[in-house]
Length: 174
Image: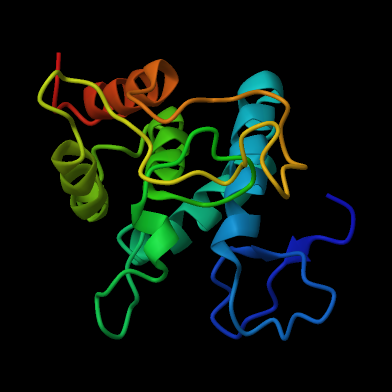
């Protein structure tokens, strides 16, 4: 992630920003989730406590926002944050954030409950989840330059697996 660095916001909120013209006032959720995950996994592999501390500081940014909400109004920060996507690529959404928070042992955190509720609401009657939108264009479609794989638009096994892992880690399913 060349050029990415911790945000220089006055709040020291633990997030990251890779924008070359970043003001440092706000951290990017899109650009904070991958470093948080990487730092956590690095800590698991090496026991390097500074990596764990940095990951936890970034997790605090997401939890402070209840995973997807604006601090001032409580509304979603961006509509795409509350829409499930598969694959998520580098984009932030509630499930991808919950996957990483669960990996860190933070899914049961009370400030994640709004996001967990939203995830449960998106469950289909048959117990699976489907993407609400996609970042890719199917092969052969105009403007398709992202993927050569058609990831489908129906219920998704990997999305369902991730959702169930998160809900299990939060103690909401067995």
